[in-house]
Length: 152
Image (tube, rainbow, N blue to C red; front, side, top):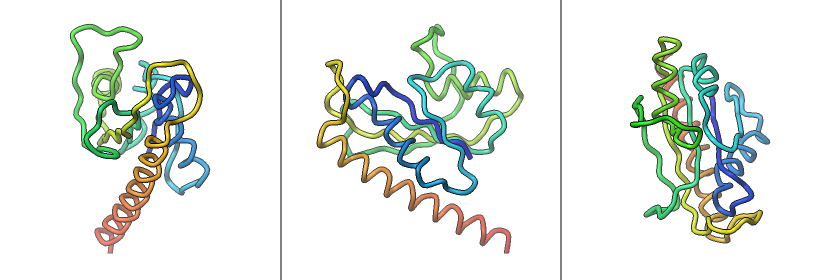
């Protein structure tokens, strides 16, 4: 399993993805590879091609809740540029280039402060980060239990 946290920590709450991936990486969870980046790029298609499951983690603007979690499918945008890569684009490239499509989810963590160049998360974003981490760890635990039951 691969987790990719992405965003720009120099843009306030846009750093939620990297903050999440760094927190998860500190846990050294077995079977989970963690990557942190500023943005998604074509090279991520190669990285995800060797995994059955990938979790993309990014900041979410104007989210209704502390976080969202949804499965995503491959899709290409009208045009591809350096800032237009989204999880669906990376999945599509992975399918096209490597003939595999891992199961993929996006964990969007709600942020409020994206405009100015500044390091650090807003208070609300920090609280949302904690909630998202608790959810993710619980999701991983339930997933492991389900896989264990299926192999029993």
